[in-house]
Image 1 (cartoon, rainbow, N blue to C red):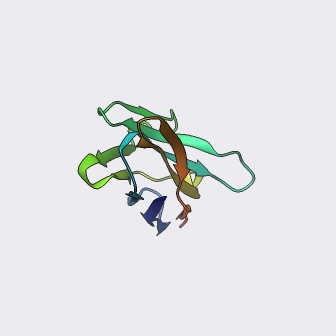
Image 2: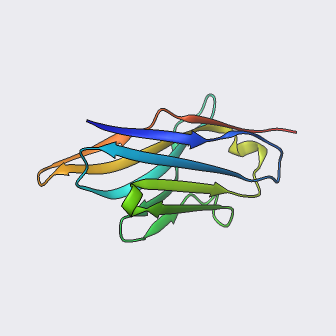
Length: 120
């Protein structure tokens, strides 16, 4: 059994900062990739940032230079530091992880989602 538990999120003014974290627990062998997605009301879920277990990162164009993804591999935790937040960053943010629970078993898991609201 694998679980992703997110924390962080909340209400912030435009230009402010917020941090999210997501911890994976359970019968985990390795986590090749950890990602953050978001879904705004009425829109499709989109990839925000991703990071492999070797440190390779990828960002959506809309957040480059403002958001930073990081990982603590020893703690199976991924973070998302969000700076210079804009109204359009308002969404439910979801943690996603590609997790190997065995040599031949690899599955994508999702967190429960956390609301980020940017408002004045």
